[in-house]
Image 1 (spheres, helix red, strand yellow):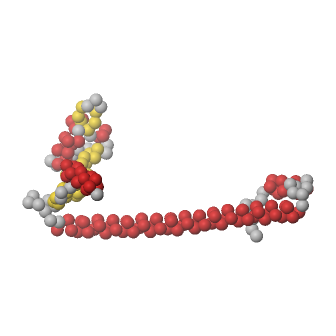
Image 2 (cartoon, rainbow, N blue to C red; image 1 turned 60 degrees about the vertical axis):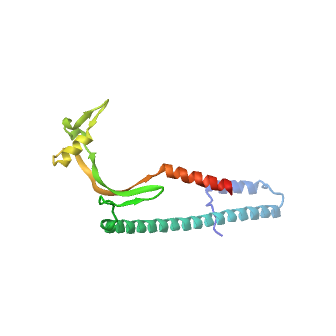
Image 3 (cartoon, one colour; image 1 turned 90 degrees about the horizontal axis):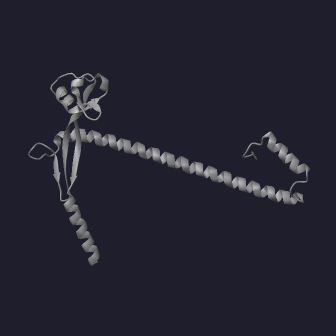
Length: 186
């Protein structure tokens, strides 16, 4: 049988010293029984480690498969959303709109946001004064939208779509009260 822990020279020397001094046991049978118990404990511990490694490998594999599946579903949904965005039902203003008792939702476009990637390059005319100085993104946006070039800044996220959901808090409170009354009556 292969040793679970490789013996180094110091361990061998300690074992020789124990055996030469008569050891801790009065008889060879006692020493053999003790050795058998230690060996059984070591084998049990080794088996527990092996089982834990196998469980970990199965969990890791399942987690990877779940992540891969979610990524695939996410990509599929992104594709469907972009493909069907033009076919979304709209309200009278040409926007997707969904109204319910507890919430309202609509699809909104984005005018983009100003990303100042090099503040030192932005001309001082595009800065606003606060306690600290920083680029005035509203002024930069206006300049960029009018076609002007602003060194150190650009519009990002233009025409991005996102869903806006507004919860009707009063209706939610009403629903909670209704549920509390029903629960009290039951």
